[in-house]
Image 1: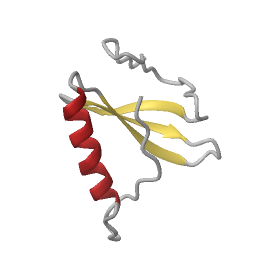
Image 2: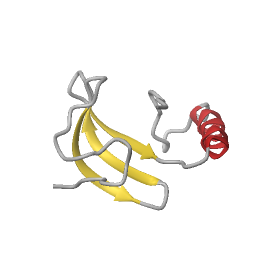
Image 3: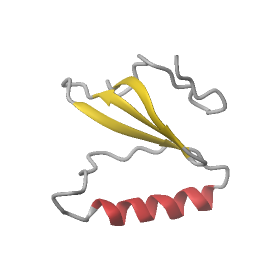
Image 4: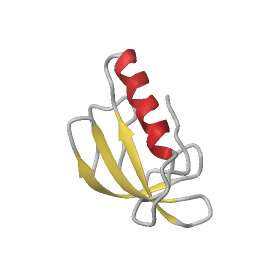
Length: 86
């Protein structure tokens, strides 16, 4: 079982998230968080990235960068569907 133990929201294989996404397996981990393979509410395979920040201003800056990246369109880029912040 893969678990992110020091997160405010513990994550593990098979966990069902509030919005109907179900975690499948941990795909990668770095200094700022993790990427999980998951299934959307309609059963489509997706990737979910969970990031943790100790400082609100850093999280705000990162969210701004993500919103800019979301506007990019290219056949070799994965399209972002949703961004949630808690």
